[in-house]
Image (tube, rainbow, N blue to C red; front, side, top):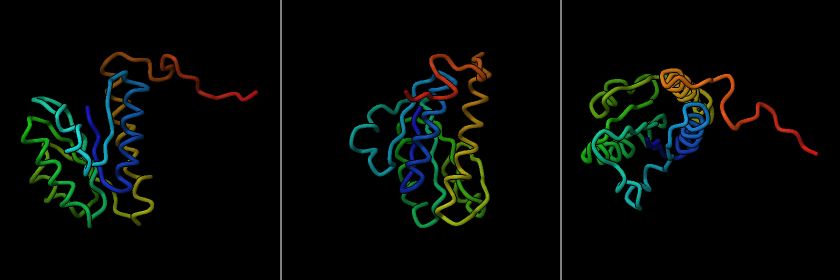
Length: 143
């Protein structure tokens, strides 16, 4: 599974990928969408799930261009974007999640919620104990 996004969305992708690894034990990677042609695109094949985060309207079309590249290689794409871009994202992705639009600097705080929820439900479907993920501590102690 891959998470792709541009600018602040790429940082949000890192959190989504990490959460999926932590509680669902699924290997995933996060990449800046503009970097796909530098290697990660070669890993996309039929049935690969790509989560594309596109919450920055000025970068939306560029992100959708990357989405078209992964779709051409057989990926299934879940898009996450802001309200107001519903029609646009449905033209490209297989399914989409919409979050409220806010100031671009606060957008990651909203877009991370569906990623964490997604990881939670994937973990439950796989029978994972989300309250006690293996090899993780709920707190870190410093000596």
